Image (cartoon, rainbow, N blue to C red; front, top):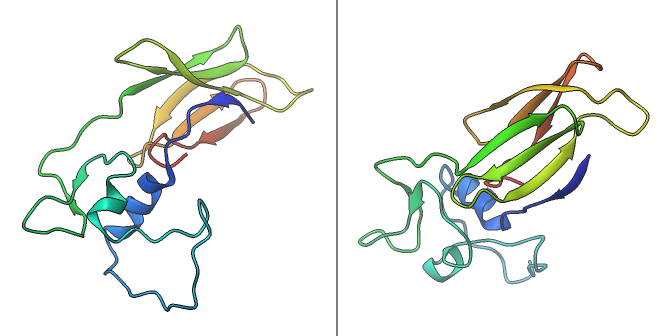
Amino acid sequence: MRVRGYRRPALAVAACAVLALPVVAVPAAAAAVPGTDVLYTLDADFDQGVLQDVNHDAPNNDQLQLDRTTTFFPYVNVAASARGTMVRIDVDTGVIVGEWRSAPDGRGRNPSRTTVDRLGNTWLSNRDEAGAARGRSPASA
């Protein structure tokens, strides 16, 4: 369960999906719903969000391509056992940008370890509940 946290714009999720897909024309009848149904196809669209490991540099305008180098996620995820949560800390500022409970109310909260997958999703284990919970990355949250 998410208590408080940082949510990256939907562009980051859309950017990841667009990488492997060709640009497709949308019929005029398909009206976009702001924040829900958005198709990013132009440089101006991409510039509305935060790009990580992709760009739309010339000469390949109006499309995304992978950067030649990758950037590490600028967060550290810490199992805060005394609080029963996982906290996400911005490594540049030291500010907590998100905090998640390690179990629902009424269940044992004793987080143990965190790990981050290649998409930036954070996985948190819980000693008392013998399970793992997944938190979305700022790249996909």
